[in-house]
Length: 250
Image (cartoon, rainbow, N blue to C red; front, side):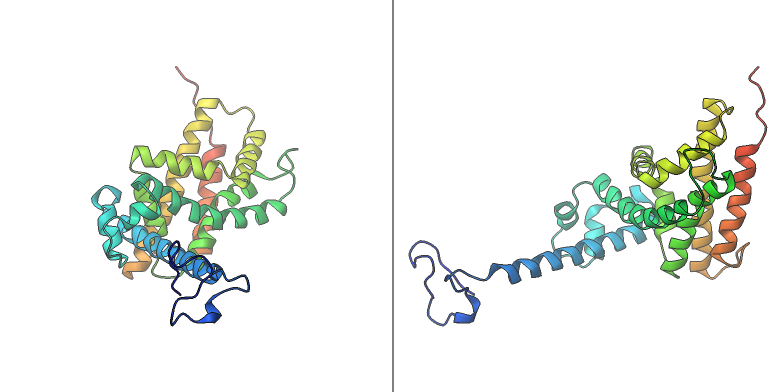
């Protein structure tokens, strides 16, 4: 389709231009072309996210540039990552959001089946399962190889980027409901201990999942045979962590 505004006049057909490319009003059919561009842009974004996950997982976030990611994703333009996402922090945020969109759906379904977190009827172990199983089920569905758990673990080693992970994951409705339910079940836990054990929980989940993902990728042995068994072990350990006695401060 070729249109030249101004000299040829709007709505005119240039020699050799197919009539089927124009609407009944004489205007170009922009919908199909626009839709095609949007689909290609979406495919490009997905390819960039996939490559960024793999490179961050294998080399660390600080060792990989946006330019390297774009080249590995098959983009001739050195600024493709910046065009589609912005800064590296924006790219990391997009990676985290893609992950949380999947785990959010799984966690919401789990919460519907464990009772009302607002009245304390939900069991602590069930709530901890809501922290763990959406992630293990998601990684199980990805198959082998996957890089997502290792990528997120690498991101948490960078203070500025770790804040992005915290903001994006804790801000979801399902996570707020889960954490609120745990807080209601542990009313006597001092605030500083609650925060400390929250950090321990986050680190244990992130690095346990990353280590299993790495072992599966490399064909090594794993302590647990399945992701379901990994989830059960993590829930056991974290339940013990949250119910552990608190030594009074001196």
